[in-house]
Length: 427
Image (cartoon, rainbow, N blue to C red):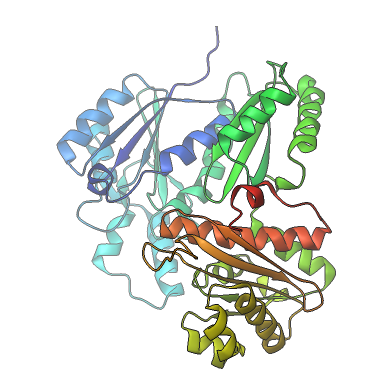
């Protein structure tokens, strides 16, 4: 009887073992494998110890059909993956011409010489096949080790993400029984995982077993996943999607990997309109999220980070009297910040935010987590005071998302308040 291949992971690096680096790569790999119906049977993390890595690699290769090694491809002395695989395979390390050509092009593009440290990344086990790395210096590679296909990938998450495309496609093509899972991902903001599950339990008590329901909670967005095993069940999946859209409505941002910033830019671009930001407690995070999106210059005009009160006045025109009477964290100040940004950037819409991020600085009247948010156009500018008493970085993350979400809602013509307004209402 045919069976799906057993996939195992070997993660390398002292920084993972010590906790200096949080392992997110294994989750990324597992999620991509799940898209083709494969699961990770076992994963092992080992520090930069060549003897220990050799023993673990040999043990895994004796039982696994596919082994994905993550990390250890770089130019430093503790990057050991190529040497370990060559030792276990009983082959020499050789300078691979394609890996060398990749390194030469990578260095030339950056106007830097190819030194001996970087050239180390072209030393691969004899017989290895190259896996292209379109953004990094170290190519990936694979080698057959007995019955086990060993695939070596970089530890840099952005490089791994791109490299997984051909790897997953190749694994899918090699399956004896190609997986037929059909997955739909819905991106949401303003919903908690437990709250969403309870709402589904109450509204759809007889959820069909054929439709796998999953959640991936994160900050700021939460993903809801619907998956079926065969195309014949797509109609049932679509029915469940419709129920979720009825239930969660405008808390659903979009499908796939849609981000709030990208959705806002998409809506603005479609209307031929522009946005500016005026940020205090979020420190430019909203502008940063917008400018990460390719093509954002079509809709994003300028971002102002006005942290100190005198900068709010000199840069955005916030009146000194307003600051003195109401304080920086006030409706009056965020309105003047937004209006000042709109005028100076000659933009159609603005998002402005000023709050108490903590852990200090709160008062009885304005405790830590208090924030005033403004969004909209000069003719239709809205404000709201929220209380989000969480750790400083999370506070900034969630408030940046809330600002983008409220502008998204305005651009879509949505009038109803989101759930988090009632949950986070300050006054």
